[in-house]
Image 1 (cartoon, helix red, strand yellow):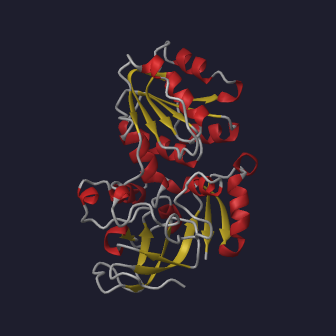
Image 2 (cartoon, helix red, strand yellow):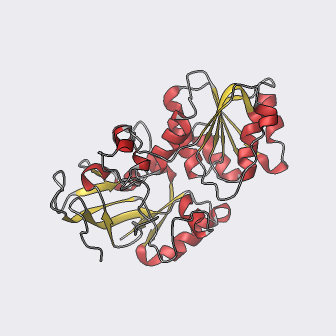
Length: 327
């Protein structure tokens, strides 16, 4: 049972949480800041159990959405909208402090890191707003400079790639090409609005994209996996003047082919989600413009969390996208 440690803290009784691909990266040893013994998880909704003396926007009993990023709102990074680099927050839940995959969680900077849940909202859908939808939108769509009439390729049709697919459609690109090894996920991508899909199992994704784009390549290539092979594809398919937007968590080095890209006016962007778009996305989900619940494929209880991890980690066999874990 966590306790209040700072005046801005809140203790939240978890109602629903989920597992992120980043949690799997942690288990593989890709995130050095997360030490053994840590309670994982940085997403979910719950009910406030207690608040610190400095918390003014929330009180016991409030239902809240927990942001994956904790922000003080006052430091130099927060004042620039870079909440992910908050000097006393950032991505700390389930990383450097205990996270949301437990019955209770302590959330620092509650006033600026929690969102009240509107009455009548579907709380399972809102779990997708803790991390996955803001990450796909900010790190992929915004950083990738997706524009009306442009051509977009998303490499990786897992949950985060599908979140980028859903939010890219805000800007009416002419084409959204999804690339993945898993035919089931590509089928889901087509249902979610992809205009074309490529199964890259044969190693010929570059040739397929160039054929689709009259040998030009794509204006935006979004890397949504976090392995060298997928970043390699992005470099192969980007058009002159295009943008490669990295979302994936990379635990091993990747090659940057400047010998091929040096003269092509390419931009490469990296980012940890800042959750500056959460309120906007909350409004979009509430209005029904995006059906966030379609990302959810499996349900578990807290007592079944190991089964949830097993299901999520073997998505090729289980066809899992996002799993919901309920109290």
